[in-house]
Image (cartoon, rainbow, N blue to C red; front, side):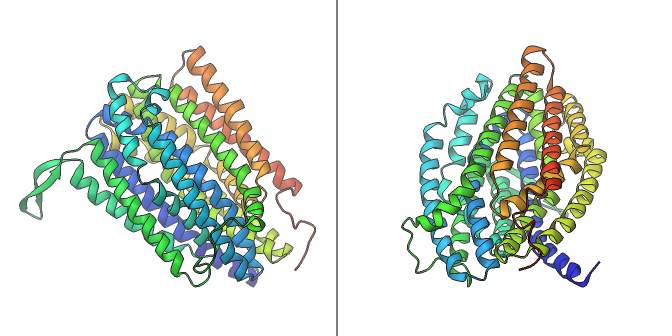
Length: 459
């Protein structure tokens, strides 16, 4: 390995590890949330999990705007144009205000209808609706966390979002502990004491999440305002179309991709919810477990997007090619390790969240199926991340929509609704979707379509 490659490896890891740690904490809290709610019974797990795909739909749509700013800011930083970076951040503030207010109105207005659309069983619809409503009351600070976190990462600061994310998750866990359960006697190191509790159950979990979201949104806004490189202080937040146009040109295909795939997740989950409580609970738990094993992939994707954008801004074709040569084997190696661990640990991990043997057996089966496809998905994640960093979001949009709707949704509809097959068949369709993405992104990589500097050898 060349000396330059060692230096680049250090930069990659410096950018990737805070994002990985942040996602690890988020996933750990998701595990704890699911386990705490799961202790209340299968109905509680189903009430929380039944609307989770709608949450992905909303969150991923807002996050897509961050991708547009990531590409613009990473290129500006690579070109050492600090003024352009700061002006673009002021437009990110405008986007937070617009998306935060708009999605607050949409989510609160539709909170009673979402469980109905998701085919949630009638007995838990009211509980699912109240959980969803409380979760989206703080949509403005949630939008700030998503978009401002991406802005900071694009500027090379992955540690600030990590630190804030860790505290957000600790607040969530602490409040869960106090709000979900009733007042009870506890023992610690031989001492018995009374632990106060609100006994709010699922509603307590929603309130805990809402409070932690508010804290996170406020604090990441303060940190951005004080940031030495990308603070929007003194900048106008009126629309500046010289910045918004290129940002939206990148963001809109990514937003449509995320919206389309997330809508697919909603349709996918609705079909699974129609299979009954056991399938819904097993699917919810398996999704929670699986998310931890994608952490290496998505941590590397953030680093790949930022560094690719920097190389593009600097017009450094050699660095762009070197980044791909380094990221791909690292990513595949990490995903082989995480997939192997998931295959081995699946039964024990599902047992953390459920004591129901049918749920444990079904969850273990689908997790071991998806574990085998993780290295292929890891390749797609890296190439897509580098394409986001250089502003190429149209092809990933086409690939993801094609895979989601032509393979996963049509396949799941045929298997579960027409043929009467169960959750295993639905997850098989999901794996087929991931394998299609691998093939399409591999062809894009081999043809060079991911790299706008493929004909450039230097600055």
